[in-house]
Length: 504
Image 1 (cartoon, rainbow, N blue to C red):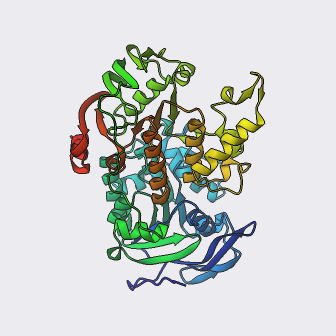
Image 2 (spheres, one colour):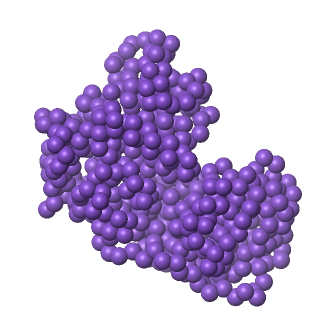
């Protein structure tokens, strides 16, 4: 079994050895080892469900291992707890940042440190100099008096990093740190990472954006099915070899599009759609079997366009027609009746009932189609739909009765897809369909969409993952400041060309 060692001469601040963890007889981690040295960045890679989250929870004291040991500065820890982890300088910055939206930046930075120190009376003004010092030291332009709920995603992330450093963080785990950031914000984050390295902080990046993490990391650790399967200096890895280590197979990311009848009547026609402050004069057609990409920087208006098509937002001008019939604006029911399905960007809060079973989620949007006598659900009909989509989308779960909350990100996304495929939509709109999904699941989800298009469905994909769009789309529209500023099709669809226009 592979083990890790630190070849750079600096003693590791954190070591884990032979970590094993099971849940109900299922092995989550099997003899995993990891070493983190000061001032080094490690990429922790693996598919959803490979054990990354479990390993981080064990290191931060949230979970206890069945066997194995954790060492800080070479000294074994008998039992790691969240309090011990904080005292040892171990911090985890999760995707949601775990900030208080109604408190200021300064209050968010210093409050957890006050709690950890068991301060009986919290006085933000007295602790404010600590926040000012760390912000100045890192050279950040954060408004300490701004409420966190009003900040951009990038500034919330910087606030979370400052909070970690005020507590003397020596090891920082960053979970999907660039998911919602623009290209310029990613560059800004990576510049901060380099400053943290100079301070001697050990960093671990957990991300599905492999090109980004390889560009900022010095070491790579790969988990698969709970086991350490590859590790070494970043020079030993490329995107393709890292993908193969994660999945155990070669993943084909080449451009594959199904043939579309160029003379077919449009399924969807969008004419001069507009909404003040969001987008203006948006027009395009979508043919049966076509996959249309809609991209742009965060805040470009791409998401608002999708929400207007589905009736979440009410367009003030223009019209939307499906198969020649106009769809009433601002009415989700009208959009569904017309045959439009929508997979939202935030599947956890908008797309799923987390505590309900997979089966309940799959039929949640198609209850009328599964009723008997307009009152009672048909057990036979619902069972057939649930079983068929559970198999077709290859949802990895013990059974359809499993709660959605227990699923990995990739499998949760498959359930959202199943929910809308159960409605037999003419048009499926997907906002960030593979965000937070591992590379293997991403390939499978894209193939599911290709098959749906081949069966005659029209697909609209909103994404800032340009290589993903290149791999599946017939056309790609670029949105900037609420307007479509460029369109690419066929051989024009190239990653570099699209990114150049996006960044202009």
